[in-house]
View 1 (tube, rainbow, N blue to C red):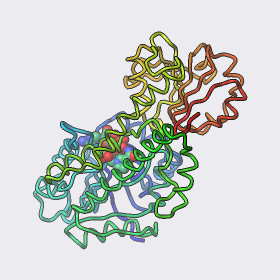
View 2: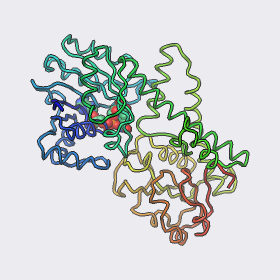
View 3: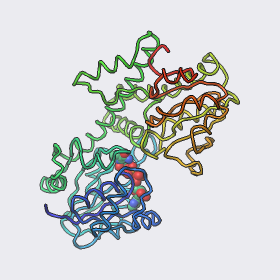
View 4: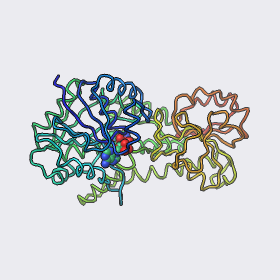
Length: 436
Ligand code: NAD
């Protein structure tokens, strides 16, 4: 394999994984970030985010001299550079449209320093037309622009990068697209070579489909409750159909995280701008918002016996706060959205999450006070609400927790727990999608 000289701008979940994995494939990679403290820590091999194998790959890359970290995008550009990956944030901006200011800031910084023949690759999730816009902003005929959206999932980022379901590369410059596809050749994944606009839209199309699938299952859960049917059996039966598959068929407190909420909103904006009313997607977003309120109603019913009951001054213990298991990311976490609704209803909240230390100072956690272990969490609570599907919650010592709670009530918004174990331990259990 031909080792390329690559720069990766942005060292978050996507950028650091991209940099460390490309170095592990033998390329020479320099990673840049605006945050100088983060860069200092990374240069010492200290990885802030919780991702299996990531710290190991960073350490290996540093030791082999194939990975380095620099402060600021401009510092990553040298005369040997062949490829620049942009992995900066594209958060939800005004009206739901993706905010491209970080992408633009990086282009400003690197425009004049790029050696002729460099390929600028957009890995961030960006609206259709961004490759075009990037070309305009670069004002460099001798630099190609390629769209190569990333599909990794937090919690399994390294695994997903090295074992992708597919590689998507889009560009109006065929030879540059092939060069980028070649970087991944060793991974043996199916590769979709297309134009830039299609690659950009493909990423949103995939994420919006996943969001719709989840909203569909949450709607089915509600229907099952009303009809006295059992969602678990229904999704099992649906999942055996290879056209549907087992993944993303679990009900939950509503989808969240740093991608699905912003990507669904951005897709609505993209559709609006094309004068297309994407009603199916709008309904999936509405269903998701409703799901949060539905969880609060479930808590009210479980604790007070009726939907209108008051939660004022009741103490509720939240099991899990991250947006999903195996990550420490709380961005747009449904757990925190539900916590905010419970707080508004007057409840007092304590939280425990295996990935968050009790002394963590995160403004996003609002009024939730963190504790260090599940027994402390359960002490004197009126109910435990399971919000994140951490596998270890299944094997908690539920009898021990039953001894310390004020009232033995569990609302399981992920259908994670074994309801028989809970009942034997003295708890009442409420899940989603069944009459129980
Ligand atoms: P992140 O917030 O974890 O990381 C972004 C990094 O970019 C941060 O370290 C930040 O300091 C740095 N940065 C910001 N502005 C910069 C600048 N001007 N110069 C240099 N560095 C800068 O974000 P992320 O989760 O890695 O997401 C990045 C992009 O990838 C987004 O478009 C996101 O939608 C997309 N994406 C994310 C995931 C995911 O699971 N997180 C998956 C696929 C795609």
